[in-house]
Length: 223
Image 1 (cartoon, rainbow, N blue to C red):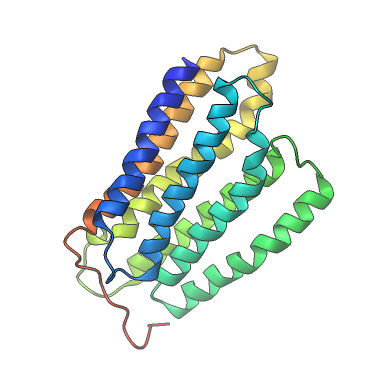
Image 2: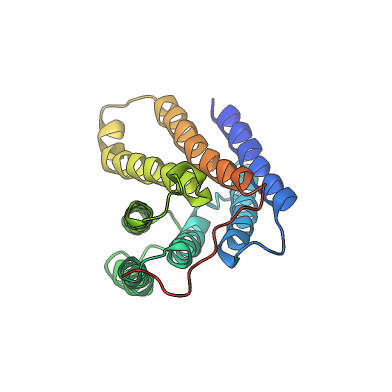
């Protein structure tokens, strides 16, 4: 079961990265280009960690402790740049500022570096969840006639909302699962579905950018 999940996950990540590389254009705003870079970084890190499991060497899952802040920084910055209203942009900026502060506080309270640091993982998930909610509020406040489904990052944020919410719940119940000796297969299957939803959002974002009809920011955002 574990190998099957790994294979499916790798195929999904590879599809995201290749689709982004295929559709990327010089005319894309920086946030969309950063999304392609993030897809490539995620694929590299996940492949490295999974290779350590297959080769039965020292597990490299602790790499998440260093990659997750990078991933969260990318996502919050992407949504910060894409936000149209000044008030929402300020709130996204607060999240960006809180990222290094939160990392410092989390590691001072839980100085775990060479195994997965659960508390800081939950902190990153909450930041991404809040940032996604801010972006959706920003989209709903927009007075233009552009439908939500025509906004490429709408699909990304929908995937993020499901991903972050589900993983926060999984982190909360993982001790209970271990206590009750619930099969690891339930966790693996849920993890695969959750990641599939998130990276389906990446794919939908890249595909919706294919016509290159990207909305330009107005010179003056509405507060």
